[in-house]
Length: 284
Ligand SMILES: C[S@@+](CC[C@H](N)C(=O)[O-])C[C@H]1O[C@@H](n2cnc3c(N)ncnc32)[C@H](O)[C@@H]1O
Image 1 (cartoon, rainbow, N blue to C red):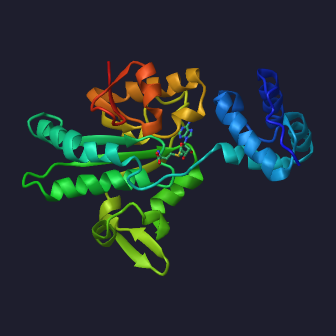
Image 2: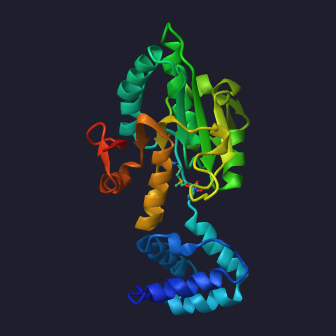
Image 3: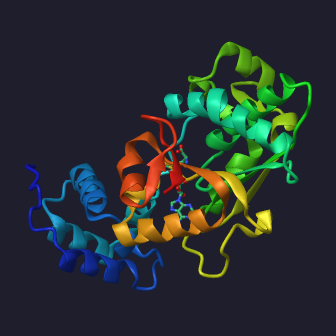
């Protein structure tokens, strides 16, 4: 079947879709999502189930609750990688963190506090912990750090806590890191406990009206907040709400890390690059 590119996709249709999604089936508010992102996700789904346009698809989901759940799930992409955005990780490892560690040694509050704000199944948080442990082991004067790793999706957080990965998921890691930080069991690689010790995984929705910072962290005050590869999902006003929340939890002079494809969003929202071309920012 030839697919209609659906040029008529409008606010009205998004609202209709929202009404259907809200008919007691699910409380996901799809009106928060960026329209281009919704359109791309819908069109992908049209093709998979051979619908010609939005109206046809609306008809399908009116009668098919499984399709509603499937569509909502496809909006919540949990894809992640170890050391995703390699330039950004290199700058953190070689420049930002060593300088932060030096500052901490002469300050009253010695602990380095990091928030991985959309941790998915944990690769980002474990990558940060590997870097921190390696810097710690190479430093005669030890320092302490804590990583608070949160996501709105409880199932993903539970997976992250377990820290089990396939061999393919370890593609970005050197053999040295795989040997040092994982135990192989059958086909699966499990993160060693010593890497888990400084990470606190919990469920937290960045749109939470109840808490200004993840309750597990008690008072926020993060030196680094990683809020990567989720801003692009949302409309501008919701990106703004997320950036306000993360910004309010940051320590003075703290850094905000986004995805490398989201750099423009940060510069549009009053953040300035801390290092050229990386996705590491500071509040203007
Ligand atoms: C594509 S993954 C990114 C994972 C990781 N940060 C990375 O860059 O590889 C996006 C994650 O954002 C989470 N997410 C989306 N909206 C969220 C919200 N409002 N609060 C907390 N997490 C959210 C999703 O559950 C998903 O795990």
